[in-house]
Length: 106
Image 1 (cartoon, rainbow, N blue to C red):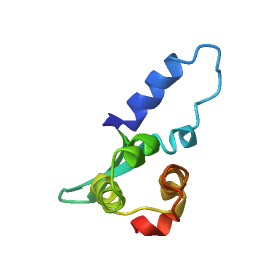
Image 2 (image 1 turned 120 degrees about the vertical axis):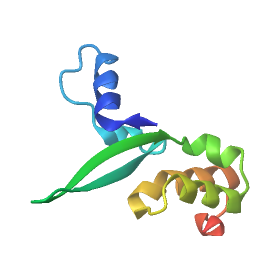
Image 3 (image 1 turned 45 degrees about the horizontal axis):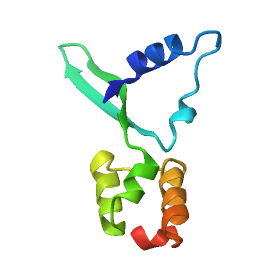
């Protein structure tokens, strides 16, 4: 698991000559973005600190080595709530590898 700011800084240093910030959507299907919120309360304010992390979870490796129900379990263990867009690479990999409609793992 990588803290997002550290991951992006490291990734940028590994891409010499690329002057724009590396887009995180390039990680789709390779890693999942996780949210951590920390709430602190002091006398005057409630303060919420938000950090993002990335966990390596390659779609191809996951579907090639795991049964359908286990794929779903591993996805939910990695991240309890998913958007359709975040799930797409995993569903696409499942369909390519098995030839089955992705709904079979849901």
